[in-house]
Length: 253
Image 1 (tube, one colour):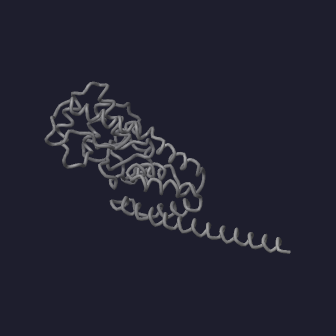
Image 2 (cartoon, one colour):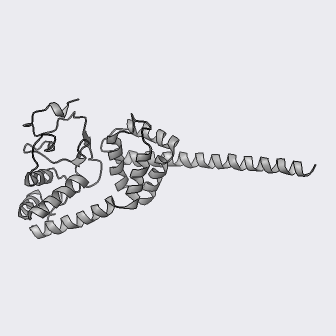
Image 3 (cartoon, helix red, strand yellow):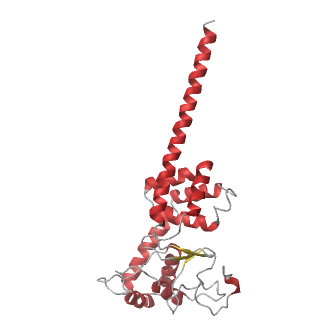
């Protein structure tokens, strides 16, 4: 593992074995690389490699360079990189900063698609739309509740519930549907179920199949959790019936 603190500030790309570099290419429409140290999605340097975050290089932030770097890392084929970069350069400094903040925090590829008007106004409208959606989601009771459930686990299973794992779970939580989010929240709220789920999650490959495998694992553990709950309820009912029979026996004497 490369220690990023030992790299020269002139190195603009992230080493592939950096312990803080995480893939996000398995999430739909999201930038493919994430930095767990600074909690940001990463752009591309001038060589097309994964760009180091300016703070990692101990360099001052340059919003224009950061915006162009993020756009350069876009992967969706229906987006025009050239038009998006030109429109970004025409934005006011205020909207350039908003654009960068939304993209690097959410990984959303805000851009001018082919066929759209290639103007600063178009990109500004797309930025405002994504900003509102991101703000609504980050402030939503559902996400706050899920973060609270993860925080309540405390030091539980520290080797599998790392800060990086929490970040990844929050990213995955966002792309699940409502019923799947409820499943995940319920599993994380039950100590035994959470431990079994996290131990398996820790071992599955973090590749292009992760989202599919994660969903499969989620349904599998949810079924097991429901079976455990049914078995517990069956035992409680048997215990209630036993006590009722004992009480009837005493009353008949």
